[in-house]
Length: 276
Image 1 (tube, rainbow, N blue to C red):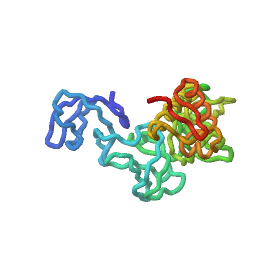
Image 2 (cartoon, one colour; image 1 turned 90 degrees about the vertical axis):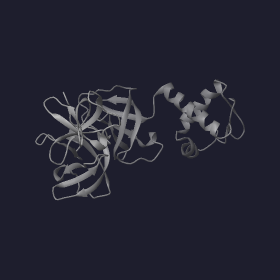
Image 3 (cartoon, rainbow, N blue to C red; image 1 turned 120 degrees about the vertical axis):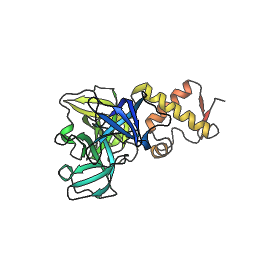
Image 4 (spheres, one colour; image 1 turned 180 degrees about the vertical axis):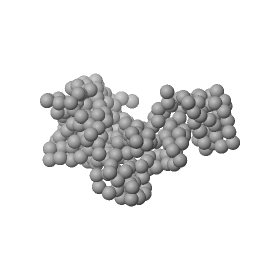
């Protein structure tokens, strides 16, 4: 079974002057010459992405789009018509967004957060800005402390609404976010709390694993700075955030862990690596 809008592993059936044909379920699918890997021969299996060309023919490519069907991604508009707009998604043929699927009229050169889906009427890949109908917290697939993928959705008075694993919505509160973000930004986070199907999330990773990852970062920065960094528990949260990209609380926990592991020592003006 082949899947439009996704990557498929298909066998080369025959060669042609303009490419190779791949075995489909009930049809042959063209992979144009420009995308055929060097040395490809009949019988080889190739990983290809399938979509429809401008003449509605199913076609294959070895190019990688910025998103596949079901993904929510930030894409740039490249042109508009009365019927809709076209977005650059990394393939030769741009992705169409009907006028009815836009929240406001799209402008070439601007980026928009959209979901890639298959239009039921045409069977073609398309995109929509109207994401809410695809997002629901009624049946959750996550639980507290889960590591999740996040996309910044919109700003509110208390923080940012984020899209969780392309399925749910949650909130990152302002006091948990230590860098500037924009709609469409992607980051890792973990589920802090779930109450009445409302989800609070925090960027980064939970518990000791988060501290362990930050430890590696601090040791790398020490190595890159000749084993010494002029930061300590008296440094301001802003200084810590700007240099390390973490909260002061996380910084203090992490250097405390490194101190106990005898990897660093504290001086009056900073921290010093004890590793060669």
